[in-house]
Length: 308
Image (cartoon, rainbow, N blue to C red; front, side, top):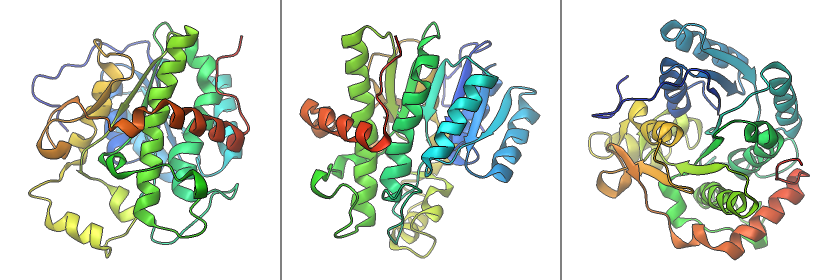
């Protein structure tokens, strides 16, 4: 793996980081680079076998820097268990990277609590995790949270009338909605931090179009999307490690502005070195954000704000 030209990560010794979905792809490469820079990284993954294997691979290059804790974002009980275990074992958190996700599942699936899977994993599970860890995060000298969105947010809309897509399931519309929700979440969290004086830096990033397992784990190898991606590899896809660059930059940028959004700087933000990315106006709409936040709190059963 290599970083973008001119990149040099700061010394992260003493920093504690959680990365969801870090057993492969963007999450794994992010965990590896942050661990090599000295951070203590927790790989929060659904599969114990894959999570432990990825942790061993990180430790092979950054000895003793990575640990594994099980986390299934499709089950709120698992999210609660993860948060409790992390706080009991570590007790410190500097950076939370909400990376895990599923994409364009061909058939509608639901989480353990009955929510549509993409919304449930990509957004609601991370909303709950953030709420449960927020006070721990706020104890850090410079707390930072990174949400992973997508270029797909540009075509997304929040379907409040059928948020779970129970009436007419559309794999790509649901994925776009979930990634728009993640970007709205990042921006609204920054607004609330600013208004409440929390001191939290809330950021977002997207990988462009990266060759990771997300495509085959979502629409599958035989889907038109996967076939098109394979044909277009030489033109628009970038390697999985390059897809991690915007996330890594968001995690370490010492000059980050509140609410900043990072992505590739090449054609249509598909590939290239990381830098500022374009946020669509609908992701900045405060009325939509307030409504989505209220819905998320109701569905997850938590209030997302630091404890007194």
